[in-house]
Length: 212
Image (cartoon, rainbow, N blue to C red; front, side):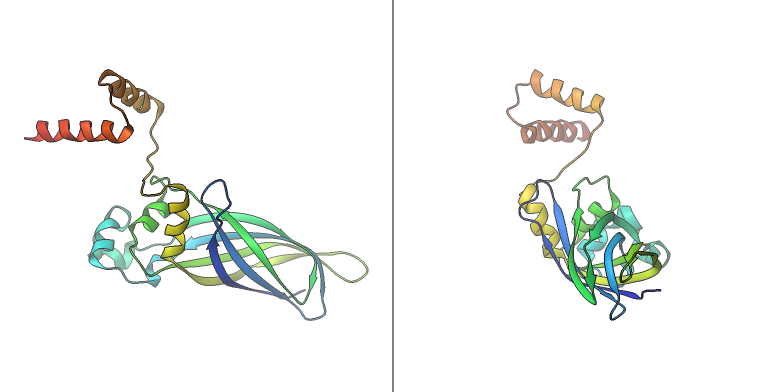
């Protein structure tokens, strides 16, 4: 069996992508002298919240995910971030390759809410690998990539913020069902409001008056 090891050497925002996208730089090492014709690699990426600390502002923002800080001993569980695949070309010994990860700013997604709550520091990620390797000299051998291959990587929060700011500068994003969207459109039209910002401000003002 060919022995594989993995390392994540860098992560950056893809400045040319149509949507928010991170690019992880992977270094893959195989048993010395073994020819790897191709590697069909799968990667599951998880956020490991317990691997970092949080200030009071971050803790308050994370309350809907993990509850009050007093409960974090049992509630600070891993959060699924992404699951992607990449076809790695042939190599012998070692190769560097990019793992492209499309992202979302949908705040209904737990990973997005978590990342939005962080003000600084690093995001503790765990990359878990599996897949199929095609190896051998003068022929093909099909070998699995064992499920126990994993890498810890600490992504700077600023990388995620730079990526989001490229596509949603100074903005948030909310997904609504069709009926709610239709109702908002009708509300905006009835009042001839010039923008969605004005629409939300009007609704908030009405809600404030009702509360008084």
